[in-house]
Image 1 (cartoon, helix red, strand yellow):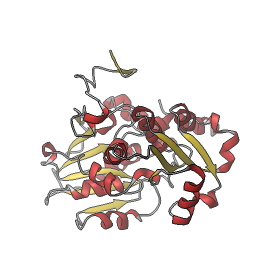
Image 2 (cartoon, helix red, strand yellow):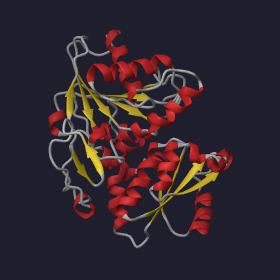
Image 3 (tube, one colour):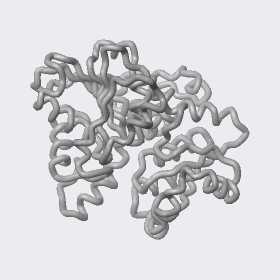
Length: 327
């Protein structure tokens, strides 16, 4: 076990030293420790899982990809404050808070749900974000709906001063640019690229970098496939599909079946899955394999987008419902 920047790294996953310097990293001189793990699923398909969750501690997976070029732009600006939006258990809020601390930037998180103001200390994501130095601003759900309103943004600037706005989930043109780097030349032989979908930014980045023979399958964490419009606004490529059959009822919803699947997958393959995104995607992939959705003998690459920080909060909710927890 080695220690780097205060984090313990398991040598099973981190075999070399990661060079992480703010300036050099933002010039693409970081050595990413992303591995691709081949997993035998006894289905007749070649299946691999790309471990983007190992990209960097606490800004892992697609969150680092989304923030990379936005941070590069911000570091060149005299304005050193970031304001963003998120829910109570948001991976994005946790990632922005961590980035702010590491890059010496002030961060403000506008959180949906004013009732959380008096009980956020019970929430592991929000307490973590605050410990990283993020100022938490709790607003009503009605006010939160205005997060894309220019008038509302201007009112926030009047209150908090100048800031760089990063949208909820982090998706914008610079985020797409970062997520387009997920696929590398060594991924060229895969037929299908599977990725969890929230706001659609990660999928959009993937789609922009697909080869002609490849198809991207997005597994929506929410009911509906509204993200198609978002993806199409960033790329003219049409070789993708979004499925919402495996959202388990909606965003952040989970049941005992998914908990058992996540725990069994970890026990069998040694990989921790999150319950909001990657767990649902992997459950869906295996079901589609059984239904022969994929072409026979095709190769499938799934992207593990991280999000493991949300497990603690999810387990709290599972315990309140007297359901099994994620181990």
